[in-house]
Length: 124
Image 1 (cartoon, one colour):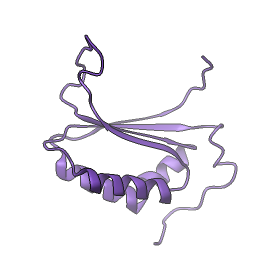
Image 2 (cartoon, helix red, strand yellow):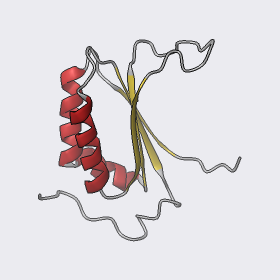
Image 3 (cartoon, helix red, strand yellow):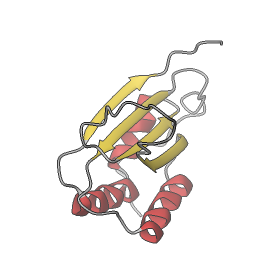
Image 4 (cartoon, one colour):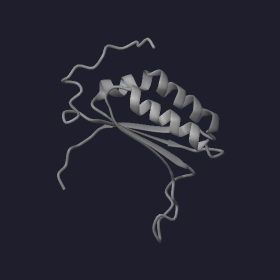
């Protein structure tokens, strides 16, 4: 596989410095095939440098009693955390991420909503 980016340096790989989070909300017209989705997510976890964590899940409207629906019809969410903004850029352009995006696009009823932000470290 050929890459169109410069590899991350050791300093850039330090996730304690500038972690960047990426959240995407999806409206699916049909439930995506779970086995295919697991394979795509696991491939991304193994192959993309600078990725700290990757989560995907379905909205749970009854996760607790009295929960207010604020989804506006969005059914699923993807969350990823990256060592820094360059790692997010690499993730966005990586062929395995592109394949995941194409998979999601086949099942989408509306364009996804995405937000990227630098994580604020807070001690609770």
